[in-house]
Amino acid sequence: VDGEDVSPNERGYNVVVIHPETGAIEHTAAFDTHLDAAASKELAAFL
Image (cartoon, rainbow, N blue to C red; front, side, top):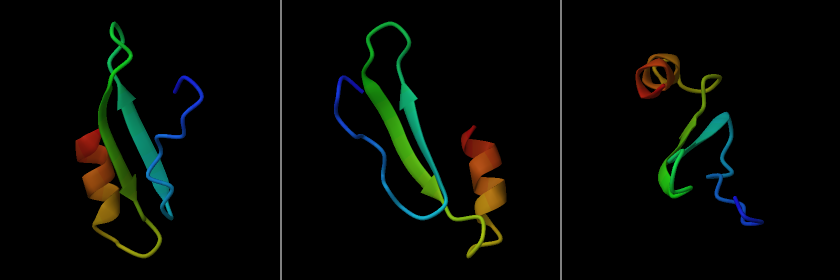
């Protein structure tokens, strides 16, 4: 975002939520669906 890496940079799916009007970072999260079976449900709930 604006040249800055804001990703958690962890194994799995890395998600960054950006406010559509202000461009502010609202949330960041990582979900390792390979190692953690519950991560799939957590990712679905997060989205």
